[in-house]
Image (cartoon, rainbow, N blue to C red; front, side):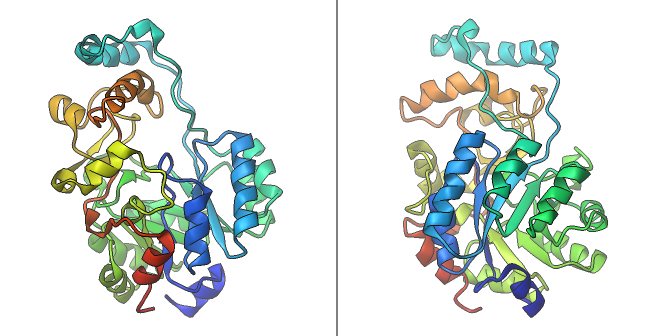
Length: 346
């Protein structure tokens, strides 16, 4: 990691723990930050009260730099035709699990960054704020900068990286196609534009003058060394943390990560409406990874009851089993130990 970037984020190690909504809370972020990396808190699924509580926990448990992460999607307008078609496609599974389609509850919340969230984080002044799916409105971004926070955001193409640089971010996360979870795409919806970390990273470094963080497929210290040798300022790692003691990864998700089938992943929009990398399970195998589903995050509404019903039987058939293409780094150890091992040579 370059000295300038180390000074920018005040990190001991060139390791950033990827924010992973749904499989972690503040405990993982605290452990990583205390070990010398940059712990991250995913905030997209948190209510304002929960956000305040998690930030209070970080403040109480850690005096090191940490990152709070928000989504920047545009809240969608429901499309009744797409919703009806998606439920019809799922109807055989509803019948199998004896689910009344009329009883389906609202989707899990995934709120974009807002003025209300900005007000909450102002109380804590996090040193780093990162964004996925682009950046928030200029006034919200200026509010983040006014706190003194450093701003990071994900780019999946060179064009996205150049756009982020033009908006004045402090560093760019080059997210290769190997990465688990949601793609950070925001200038295009064409998944053929998505390339590997080793293809994307050098192109982004050449195209911008900012520090570039490599993400996707990095699972161990050798992987960290490899991306740093290519010029990355740091490595962002998510999947390897999913089995750590502090992660809240569900039992079915943990079992899938430990199974030999974890190497079979796909970009799918079946769980949320946006492309995201998941271990291939029953619904992906039988319906295909991509379909005409409601836009993000509305696709989650119809599949949610099936997920709950299957998980009650210890099955991950309808669960978003987020994982990158390289699950080899997943181990049931503390996040502190993993962080130190990942950064051992640096």
